[in-house]
Length: 52
Image (cartoon, rainbow, N blue to C red; front, side):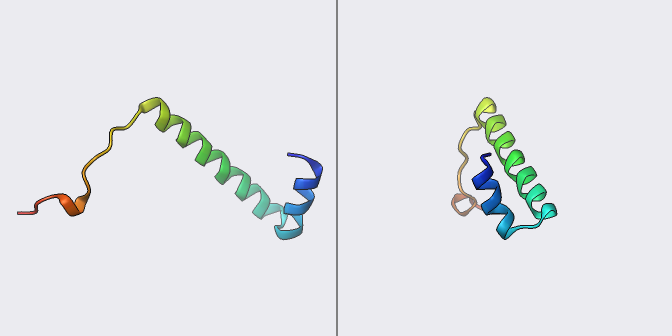
C-alpha cells in the first residue's frame, strides 16, 4: 500500500477500523483462492427444488 493510499484511508478510519478492514480483505482474498482451488460445482437454486 502506498503512503498516499494509506493517508487517504486513515482520513476516513481510525487505527482499529483500518486493522479490521485489512483483516477482512485478507480473509476474502484467502477464501476466494481456496474456492478456486476447490473448484466448487454450481448447485440448483433452492427455489427450483421440490419440497415434500
